[in-house]
Length: 168
Image (cartoon, rainbow, N blue to C red):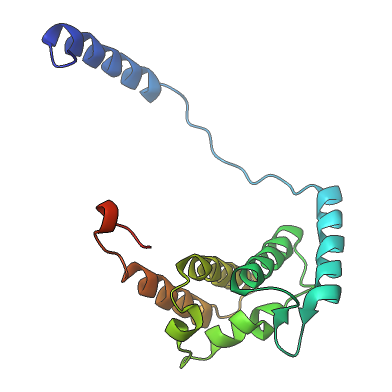
C-alpha cells in the first residue's frame, strides 16, 4: 500500500533530492531562432496560390470553406506574415469575413457561431493572430481582441456540469 510510511518516506526523500538537483541546473535564456528561408519561400508561394484560387475578396471568405477553415486560413496567413516579416496579405485581417465582423461592434456572434463551439475556438485563435500582427505593425488590435474576448466568454458561459463539466 502506498500509504505505508516504509514506502512514502523513500519516495519523499527521492523527491527532495531531485528538487535540490533541479535547483542547481543552470538556467538558460530562450533565444528566438531564425526562420528557415527556404521553408518561408515555399510557404509564401503556397499562400499566394491559396489566396489567388480560393479567397473571394468581395465576401472575405474562401470558396468551399466554412467558419473554421476560413479562420485557420486567416490565422495561418498572419502567422506567415509575422514569421517572414512580410505584409503581402496585410488587408486580409480587416477584409476577411471574420475580420469585418470583428470590426463591427454590433456583430451578433451568437447568431454567427450558432452553438458551434469548435468553430468559435478557431475564430478566437484567428482573431488573436490578427491582433498579434496588427500590434507588431504598430496598429490597433483592440477590435480583434474585443471580438475574441466576446466569443471566448460566450463559449465559456456555456460550461455546465454534464459528465463532470465542460463545454459541449
